[in-house]
Length: 95
Image 1 (cartoon, rainbow, N blue to C red):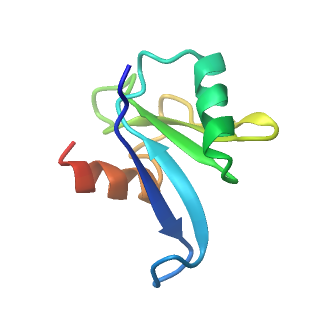
Image 2: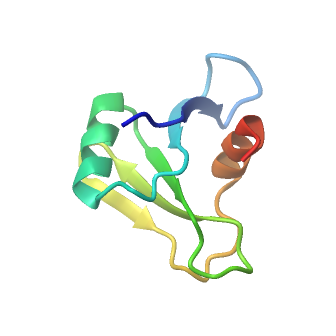
């Protein structure tokens, strides 16, 4: 399985500074266990998985994993448009 992903520098306006964050797009086919394994492979403080929204009024649903503790945060289906990092990655990919 091939997955589209981006590594973003967040909390900075400079390249290779700030906090690196992995954003995996179109992650709907992944189980929670697979997401955790991928997050551990990235070995970053957080990995964001962007999924199709449960509510058609929203643009995405996201799950955020911490490589050491697992599923750190999951936005509920009524969360709105997701995080700015997931919007940035989706915009960069044209998704």
